[in-house]
Image (cartoon, rainbow, N blue to C red; front, side, top):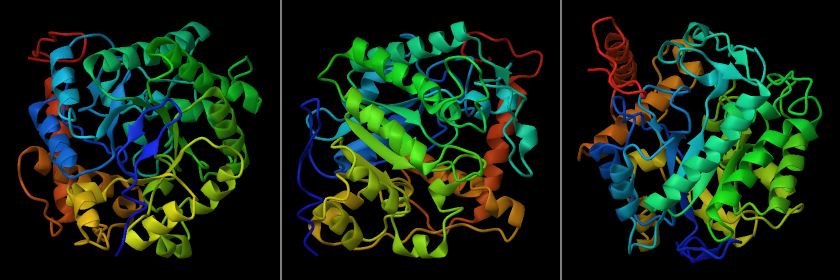
Amino acid sequence: MNVKYLNTPFDLPCGVQLQNRIAKSAMSENMSPKHHGPTKELIHAYQRWVDGGSGLLITGNIMVDSKAIGEPGNVIVEDKTNFEMLQQWASIVKGTGTHLWPQLNHPGRQAIGFINREVVAPSAVKTNLKGMSAMFKEPRALTEAEILDIIERFGNTALILKEAGFNGVQIHGAHGYLVSQFLSPLVNHRKDQWGGSLKNRSRFVLEIYRNIRKKVGDDYPIGIKINSADFQRGGFTEEESMEVVTLLGAEGMDLIEVSGGSYESPAMIGASQKKSTQDREAYFLDYIKKVRKLLKTPLMLTGGFRTMATMERAIAEGELDIIGIARPFALYPDFPNRIFEGSLHQLEIPSPKTGVKMLDSTGFLDIKWYEIHIHRLGEGKTPNPQLSPYSAIRHNLAETMKMMILKLPGFKKSTKRGDYS
C-alpha cells in the first residue's frame, strides 16, 4: 500500500525536522549491569534500529540519580562518567537522518528494592503489585530540598547528553515512575506546594521541563511521555491529563507522547484495555483525538499499532503526528524500511503466555521476553518469535541472581555507581 504520509518529514516547534513519522518508543534494555554506562551490545542494538530507517529512536530509561535505579541494568547519567561511550552511542545516527533521544527518568517508588539502599516518592505509599510486592520497599517521602535536587538532576543529565551529541531528550512522565507519581493523587498525598491540587501536583513536571529548557536552549528538542490516565480508581484521570498536556504545550514542549498505566495497571502493553480497543489497535486513540482539539503541540501515540493501514490513516486524518512503536522493533528491527519499500503491511506480535495467571497478568513476562530479543539484536543474532515464554523467566532470574551475588560481602564496591569487583 501507499504510505506517503508515514514517509513524510515533520518539523518540531524548536525548528528540528524528523525524516519520517515512525518512532521507536522506549523499551527496557537492561544491558548495563556493571558500570551503568552504554555497552557495545547496547550500541549495536541501536545501530540495527538506525539502519532500519526510523525518524526517531527513543532510548530506554536513563536514570538521573545513581541512588535511584529502576532496574539492575539501567544506564545512569549524572555526570561525565562514561562520556566517551555516550559519544559513541550518539554518533551512530550522524549522517543518517534518524534522531536519537535518551529518555530521562527517576523511578521513585517503582525502584527494585534489592538494588537501592532506600526508595523515595512524593509520599510514603508503597508499590502494590499483586504477587510481586516483595520486590518493592516502603518509600520515604521526599523533602523539598530533595525535590529541587532531582529537578536539577534532570536538567544536568539533559545537558550532558546534549554535549555528548544526542539529538534531543524525552522526560518519562508516564507508567508510574516519579513524575507520574507526583501527578497521581493515589501516590501524592503531600500538603505543600508539590501536592493537593492538580496545579501543585503538576508543578514537578513543569519545573523539570523549565530546568532542562534553560540548560539546553530553545532550539533543542524536548519531549515527554505522559499517561492518558493511570487506569486505577482514584488515580490520575483523563481530564487531569488533558489539563497537564495543555500546560506543557503552552510551555513549549516539542513532542508529547501519549501512553497509559503503571506497574500496578500495565495498560501500555494492552492490559486493562477492553477487547474492542485491543482489536481496533491504537489503545489511546480516543484520548489523543480530544487532546488534538486542545493544543497544537506535536503528538505521538504509542500502544497497539500493528497495521500499516491504521498508521497511515491516523497521520493522514491529522489525529496525531508521530506513530510510536515499541515491542515490534525487537522482532522487526528494519520494519520502517520494509514499510516504505512496500514489503510489509502488518506486524505480527506474539504475546507469550505460560498459563500461570499470576505470571501472565502482570506484564513483566512480556517485558522480559522482548528484552531478550533486544539483547539478541545487541549480540548480532536474529529475533526468534518462537522463543519459549519460560526463557523470559530464566533470563530474569539469572539477571537477579547476578546482581544479588555482586552485592554479597566480599565483593569490593569500586565506584559510587554500584560497580562491584
